[in-house]
Image 1 (cartoon, helix red, strand yellow):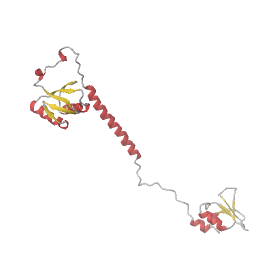
Image 2 (tube, one colour):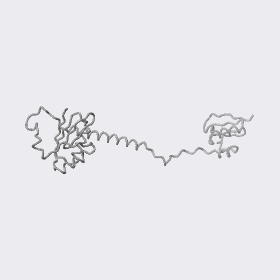
Image 3 (tube, helix red, strand yellow):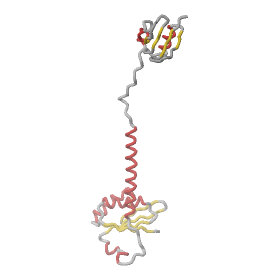
Image 4 (cartoon, helix red, strand yellow):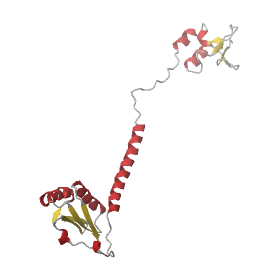
Length: 206
């Protein structure tokens, strides 16, 4: 029985196959590459499969797989998502800090303070100030500007009308300690937006 020898290019080890058909099968199955070497029973030298007269045509039909080319239409969104997350965290921290800063800057009521600055007579400054009071009605904070109850979302507009009609640009904020800081921050923002020059803050218990 004739024997065909096949080996990988440059390898000293060879595999014996009984027929040329076995060589062709291995070539088509990918077990051999066209550049691997073959030697038949009548051959004196090793030669690449693609150069052997018996297998050259079959080897030419078997094209090596093309390398995968990168898809230029694909957009990698991971870097964009990372940047958006960093910006989101930055904005959250900035907003939280700004709100906390306004709360920290609010002067605390010191009932033990003595001297002329410890008390303010409203009658002496009534023509310069308007009063904003906030009390808790159960779980709901009730905001009043000059004794008029005002929804939270309308504080800035009502404050603007009071300032324009009376010319008073100083504010006394009378607020209970149970009122959430968010309500107080909204009032202070509205005062700042309306150009209030001075704010007397009295945060007190019930």
